[in-house]
Amino acid sequence: MELTKEQYDIIGSTGNIKINAVAGSGKTTTVIAYAKSRPKDSKILYLAFNRSVKLEAEKKFKEAGLRNVSVETAHSLAYKHIVYKHAYKVRGQGYKTHEIAELLGLEGNGEKHAEYIIANHINKFISYFCNSDRKRIHDLNYLEVISDAKAKTFASTFYDYIEKQTRLLLSKMDSGEIEITHDFYLKKFQLSNPRLNYDYILFDEGQDASSAMLDVFLKQKATKVIVGDTHQQIYGWRFAVNSLSKANFTSFNLSTSFRFSQNIADLAMEVLKWKKVIDLETPFQISGKALRGKIRTKAVIARTNLGLLLKAIEYVIEKKTVKNIYFEGNISSYTYADEGASLYDVLSLYNNKHRLIKDKLIKEMRNMQELEEYIDKTEDVQLGMMVEIVKEYGNKIPKIIKAIKETHIDNDDKENAEMIFTTVHRCKGMEYDAIQIVDDFITKEKLEKLVNDGKQDKRNLGKLNEEINLLYVAITRSKRSIHIPDTLIPSGFPSSKQIHIMRVPKAEEKQIRSTQTPTDSVKSGSNGTEKAYAIDEVRKNHKDAYKPWSQELDDELTVMYCEGINVKDLAKHYGRTKGAIRSRVKKLELEELYG
Image (cartoon, rainbow, N blue to C red; front, side, top):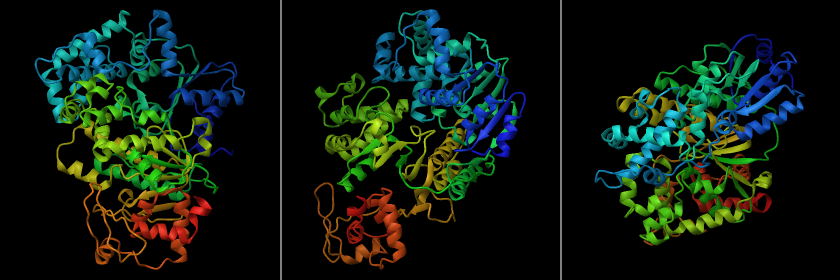
């Protein structure tokens, strides 16, 4: 690949530098070329974001003939320096809430489930401290990272007790009395002030580094290069910081993306302009220079597990002939919370079948109301999503999940998937030919409302910045085309052959289960009740229901059908009934040709 002037400038640079690289701009190619241009006897360390990136980087450096480059993650580096030295035993999944309550013998002072709520806050306090650059627990104010008013009130009431027990749990890990966590040995590594014997250190994905690892990096004598994308910072909930803004290095840009076209680059830049609402500077220019190609990989990208599962359910129900789908990451992770509770545990609580609940924390709840009170006081987002899914689908869940799992294929066969389902966090660093974005991201309208409605402290504004970044990251996963709800489209942005805007009505769509003739009355209602809709009401809610199909509309329908858009979303997009869409799909023989 011919290098750009921006890349040549980076390769020829001296001293400590930081590189702000847009999605698909060839940062790995640039870093490899940078390493290749350094003296052959130089010792170079490349710090990768996670294990999968580490393995890919090792392969690429090897192919480039660079035997003088060591590839590590922050955790693999810390593991070698700390775990081996102290003979610690590492706990892979971390501690669950009920385990912390038992280990520390927590007392709830009579308040319902208080010991578990306290344990949940202790877990988060430890994560906050271990990812920080501070030396002592007392140097941090844990309340600063709690947003929910009820959760903050609870933590404030029990703060001294929570802080004391947090120190005690860390002490038990340090002494080897209990197993240590991954966060713990990374923190101990930072506090040991290590000296890394390298001439150059290349730090990738710098926008999502922890303060602890950034502290280690900045203290090294080596020539330092930090690479990332300011607008791809999406791990603030794990206490990551934007290291590019904190490193006082000479700044370079990689602003040309070889992944997507200028249309997609324009959409990404327009979304980033929303940052003006929260008084953040707008992005630099992004150029899209991808070549056209065939659509081979298709993906649905959601902001949340809940949004993704709901979309997967729609897809499996609508596409009855679907054979192969794939979920990025382990499919079970979408039905289990980090704490270990499963969707089935929440469903059993919903049905008052305590004997079927396996998770100890959920088993302690007498009913759904108690679980929701616990969620309010802990900000447990994952459990909250599970409650929403159970409320939406109830006892249909086992059958639905079974249907999804029956069509799910293994990682080795991912390339054969008719549709890939993923959240933004799981597809970071990946790319697909065509994507469909789920309507569960922040909108500019909601963003403005949140800013105008009340006081916005620094942390809340940081969260809003990250919400904009999430949509930007989703958009920039696409190589060829994007299907995006109109609620997420910047005002006045035109649709194109590459960007298909899905017209989603602002008012909730009335569910119409149509027969083949539009004059028939229709029965609707998930609870068994009947509701009739006359032809006039169908016309009212589906304004284009009887508009003739033109060749242009047929071509667009064919493209959208081939790219996996389900019937429900097609109906919303065209302003027609689902029956009308199915009828046109049948007329065009799309199911036979592309199903």
